[in-house]
Amino acid sequence: MTAFDLTGKTVWVTGAGKGLGRAIAVALASAGATVAVTSRTRGDLESLADELGAGTVVLPGSVSDAGFAESAVERLGRLDVLVNCAGISPVFKRSERVTDEEWREVLRVNLDGTWYCARAAGRRMLQQGGGSIINVSSVHATTGFERIAPYAASKGAVEALTRVLAVEWADRGVRVNTLAPGYFGTDLAGPLMNSRWGDTIRASVPLGRTGEPSELGGAAVFLAGDASSYVTGTTLYIDGGWTAH
Image (tube, rainbow, N blue to C red; front, side):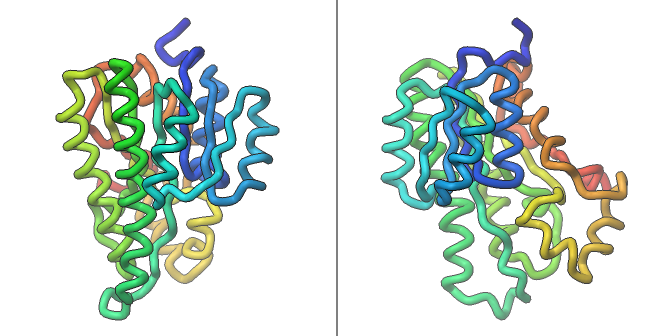
């Protein structure tokens, strides 16, 4: 058994139906974990469960529902790792044109959902005496970009929440970290990358390309297991060098 072996660990991945969440679930399962997956679309989850094999737990629902988060943790029993990957794309508008409902909807999923799941999982992990929570943020938590005010605000808040939870729970064995992806080849980023902004974004990445979803999986495995046993309260950027500018 190595520090990157997750055999015997139960992992819950939200936003697992597509894109980065799906890739993370695949990586964690490949490292030996028993994986529970959440999305609002049951069909996507059942397809993923077929890929991951027996033992995969399908938990369809919305992370913006606090009751769902509590019931999911209750159903799982033991929980060793939570990956908070559920999120919705930016409202791509100039800030003065963003409506109150558009603002609230992005924060409801990206921030409230992260909080509900982290709180529910954290309570269980504190009872168990340990665990790892991985919140998924974005390079735009710390770097400015046009027309994404609600999204950037939600991801900045996720990173602040991560730091607070890490400090509060460290002495009871629960580690909390953030993965901050740059631009990846997913359905979420596709429309923006295919617009006139695509060339601007690619020019800002020193590696000169978007990432492949599978390239995020190794970082999730690292933060989930014993390889990162002395890592908490930090943000790990997987961005092709975007934030190095």
